[in-house]
Length: 319
Image 1 (tube, rainbow, N blue to C red):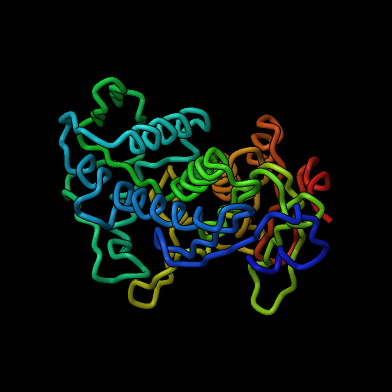
Image 2 (image 1 turned 90 degrees about the vertical axis):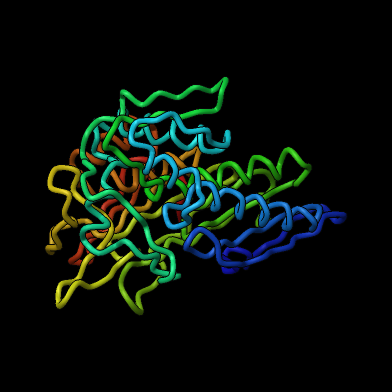
């Protein structure tokens, strides 16, 4: 992310720009703060707390407790209440194009172990279902409990990084940061004063090796997220797998020259940018871009043959 810091700096002379990069949530966290440097430590602790609560690979997490609950009410942290509400809302809003119940299929396909730490393994009951609505999920905010429908599980991977970026950016601003940029594996939330004429400059990388940057987004207060078929890959025998599944078949999306393999979405919040980046991959550009326009977002889709397609608002944010 340091590449976005190249260029013209216009920061209050009393301000300090500091940056820290570390591993978190199975990805690289890259935090930039304009203001009190000690806020970097706050961000790191907060992200580590969120990972402990939301990871499907950590047996003591709230998500693991929910996924093994068999219909019982489970006490969870308020962070997890927020996460579950977004997961349910995202499934409903997209008519299950975005489906966080596909975890049993992912595990069956070979993605049980963490790609970044093979000692961490998702444990699931073999009788679990997927591809069903979460509308019957009970969320008791007063008592901080969640009750999942029997047989269904949650995979926070489709929006967890974006939501965590939103949460941390908001907290750092509340604690006095003049500006903050939180990047988690390419899901980025910017808030407040940026280092380049008051803005944050975010490069959009090509999915193809040795290719140039596709675009540079300029954000004053907003978010950008990228979803790619190549972000999480593994092999089963001689067959290559990836983590973006069809909610209809439970199988990885097929690859062909006319398939969208990467989508970048710009919006106000990283959580929704991340959700709709996946929606375009799953639904395709016709339906996906219609949903992008309806939600007031901007998007760039990249096809396997190298073509790029921009939504109507994309140029408003990019060079």
